[in-house]
Length: 228
Image (cartoon, rainbow, N blue to C red; front, side, top):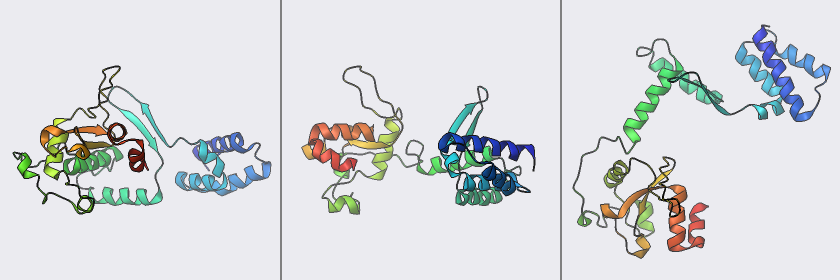
């Protein structure tokens, strides 16, 4: 075995001892035998199997700043995810012959955002007015609830208009939330109060503040159903 796998075994044993107490000499010898003549990946898999409690102390996701323009990301991937990445690497081998993970992730992220990000979605600009949002503009789930759904093109326009993120403003501090996490379309005048899908009645809130506004308008009981 090499020093890399030996050092990994030592750190895993120490992590195991922090979780469960002293590791016996017999158990240590078993660990050493299990990683003999193994690649780094195979050795790590064997260590995780023999020292399962040690894996609890392994940080799932970690970002380390290298310099002003570069960060090192550390994350745990399932075997299935690694196989998917290998397939992507093969398909993109002409474009990225070196197969660097940074190139692959960057390419996949750009591909997804170009297709799904409402802020960057290349859709035709349309002139919206309240006549557009008739009963035909419904999806099946919303129709069952008797709710006229916000059309997808209008959702995209609303997201583009509120590119700064969640529009909620704290009434005490006056600060805007601005979160980009779990953004949702919000009706300023709630539909339960007769609010329409008119562009001027729509903004963007994160899920947390969307539920908060629903609680203020409809009460905690109704909002808690959505929280579940």
